[in-house]
Length: 352
Ligand code: AHG
Ligand code: MN
Ligand code: MN
Image (tube, rainbow, N blue to C red):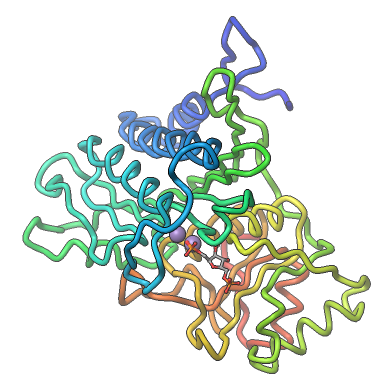
């Protein structure tokens, strides 16, 4: 692990937990912070540890398979979808600074009546991403995005309205991959940091400090089975990558869990695409709790994310479960995409 300025524990000078890191970042960037934000994040880390414990014992407990319900997306809910959702609702519900939450698994946003009191945060999440992989021991994850409660919001307002903010308003975003190890990656707009869960004492420990996405990678990641239903510009772009047009022949990696496919893309570079298809002409992935958090992290790590026509984080949402095409990747791959898919530049003005 690299050296850093955080105070390490006397017991183990190598260890920096996620809680220490968040507090340190807060003091550095907002000297008057009250610690309220780290209290909120600790609710998310706790819920993900509860989910991870279930994921690790999936074959032993009665957690595999369908829960019998259908969620708002019209998709069959798996038992772990329901458990992960309940864990987050519970852990965030007892944090008085959380005013509103919205989940993939619930049609409406939920309010905790904190809006006239100390509640100042809105949290939107996909509690269990990659449901189709749960029963077959393939990586799944959790994704979240944190927004501020809009000024003037009142308890009488529809809580969903407070969630309809473009991604550029995110205060923080992150995800957890329950993979060969469990890792949490987050940003608050000051770089991207990764923490691996040490199962021997149950803490997320800093393992990937200041992650940068490689400018060019070797893989593209998309569901090739839908190739013939991708719009032609995407087919041409993928042909360009596959045929060596970028100076190398790209290989394919596709897991089918956005968090896992994105995590590889973040660390190894390349591009992930879920373009419009015949079945999902607006794209499949959800703007608020899939595309926006991934876009925030990608940009903070030097990458880009667009919908094919605009920067993901500038899309003004109109519904909490709205879908969007998503293309996210390193600088070179995303610059090349612009020659095929959109005449408009999608680079953020902030990222270099
Ligand atoms: P979820 O399990 O939360 O519904 O998300 C599934 C998503 C995403 O994780 C993945 O990238 C995509 O569905 C895969 O879709 P295809 O099976 O159509 O490729
Ligand atoms: Mn998902
Ligand atoms: Mn999900």
